Image (cartoon, rainbow, N blue to C red; front, side, top):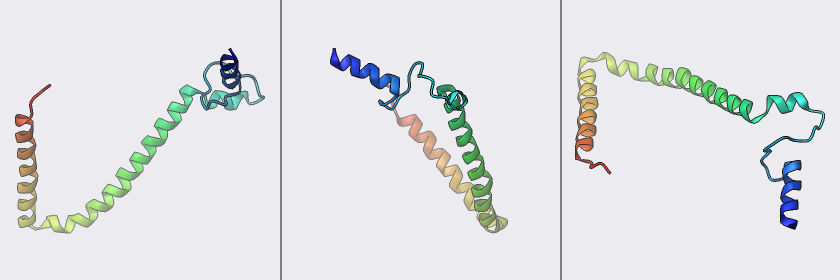
Length: 101
């Protein structure tokens, strides 16, 4: 019985680290609305999308600009095509060998 009362007290004050259910009003109604569970997922998702876009736009563009001089030679293009094609053949072979279940 004591443990159940302690759990209820922790639940009301948020000591457990998770704020499930209605919380007592603390004067920060707007902040509670902005950072509720649903909006928290939106904030995390938006942050992930922004970080991914920055990495793709900046990182991959910088990588492509350093590799571009190597891909102007037809011999390098041929070796790149052979290498990527070999990777696809290896992936298909691995998929053909692996058993399901």
